[in-house]
Image 1 (cartoon, helix red, strand yellow):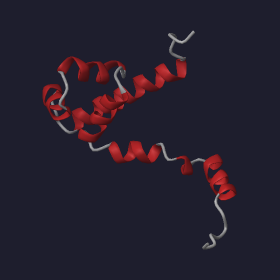
Image 2 (cartoon, one colour; image 1 turned 90 degrees about the vertical axis):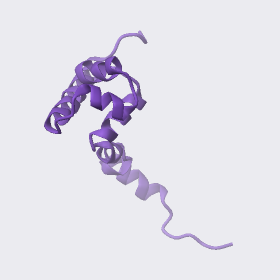
Image 3 (tube, helix red, strand yellow; image 1 turned 90 degrees about the horizontal axis):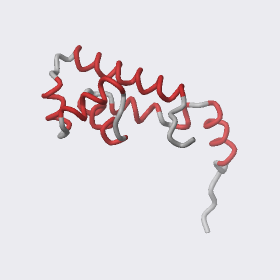
Image 4 (cartoon, one colour; image 1 turned 135 degrees about the vertical axis):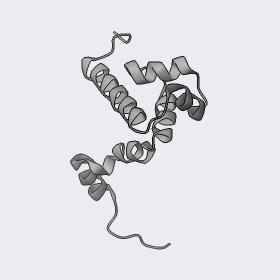
Length: 99
């Protein structure tokens, strides 16, 4: 069932689209200007802003123009999760010796 989008993913896409569109409107950026700044077509940007549809690159371009790119990058840092922090402490040597 590779073609069916899981419900949590579909919900996240719609939520991100809503957040992007709100940020765009708060910054008073018309869709056509956002599209130009992203170097993408208006229909592509409209799909991202209404449904959350688009490629990862589209998502990142919109995030960059809206000033949200650093937050997106930070949100994917595995060290911000309890498991990621625990694993990094396990896997990281206490000291490194020279040869």
